Image 1 (cartoon, helix red, strand yellow):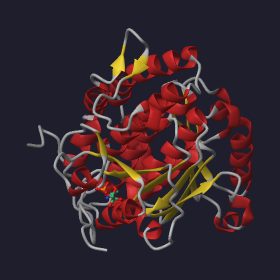
Image 2 (cartoon, rainbow, N blue to C red):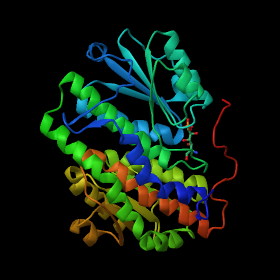
Image 3 (cartoon, rainbow, N blue to C red):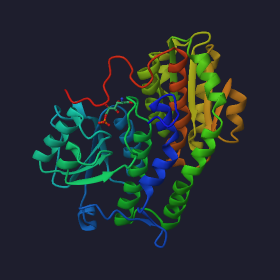
Image 4 (cartoon, rainbow, N blue to C red):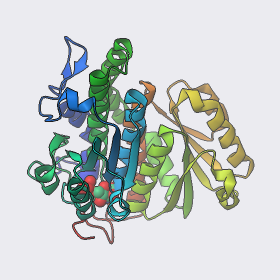
Length: 366
Ligand code: M6R
């Protein structure tokens, strides 16, 4: 059942190109160069009335939703609030007549996400769920469902579910922007073409993972490390940090690159590993200067950058390159080597990769 892989996690990482294809299947219309979501109950007229969006989720799904907030706001200009589900349910969120609530959950059974959804439903919001499991509680209770079609995810550490959530979120943001007319057709066509290329780009990336394996072996010895990034890179940093903690038990923290100097820079000493994501060209110069700040304090910097990025090659001690794509789509490529990094670091430490201590695949209690 593991198809010859040592662990479900590795199998599920390798399945991502297939998962991307399945998630996009039938949802990109080549003739109109647009997104079609026939399963959506929400009509275009209702979409045009949406004033606010709330997103709720836990853990890795929350990290996918963070990317969702950024992308939906960028493409639609609708303000998006986002909360960890366990916080949302108790903070008396302001739900108005035209608030859309989007719940993201791989399993569709996470207690806090369900409770947040129910709370929002009581206030009259329209609930759109993004989930992987057909027939799950989240799927049944939502007004609308977009399935991620990643296939069953067995490993406790979520990988293909996260990336297929990203794909659904991109398609949803594009669909909303079509209804609202907030994105020009050229940019949309360009984004769609780049989305369709992702599976092949990831297949190529997965062909040779030796560099990531080597770096993971080196990191396996350390007790503490940092991830830094700006914008979408910060959101991927949060996910990469969670993945590493969850299975390798190495303590790590993710920071917006510009925030470190407001306190945590004090923790950087000779040899502290810092994984610096810099896939956002518009923010590159700023991130490079943050890398110089940590290097000056002795950090050992592993950069994650777009292929051909010479600035990173000159600044970091090691660079993991990822394929070039549309700036909003980079999380769908940059997270992959970082999933592998967590996997190989956990393996090197002799941990039970698929069943990390203290954790359950689906958290059905509060
Ligand atoms: O099934 P869900 O997507 O609702 O689960 C949410 C989190 O419990 C889950 O993503 C968790 O953070 C993962 N173990 C992370 O790898």
